Length: 84
Image 1 (tube, rainbow, N blue to C red):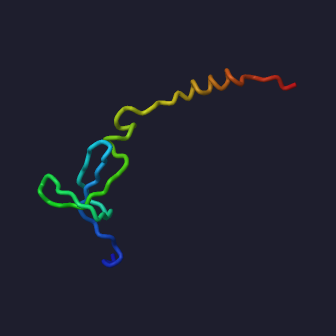
Image 2 (cartoon, rainbow, N blue to C red):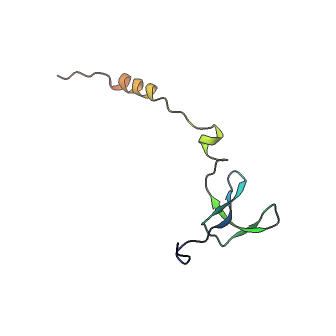
């Protein structure tokens, strides 16, 4: 690998402001903003719109679409029409 071609890979905090949740991981993401973490160290912080704490699928608030019900509703509404 060429050292001057690779992005820097280091600790970064990802913060979901809507859920009040943050986690520390390693990433190539960069940010000018920093945050002091629980261990006393300062890390760059990247704000995200959705994380596992706020995504409907992971929180159990996902809407389940009943595809069979949708088909029945369509057939009821448009049913078999006269072709004549």
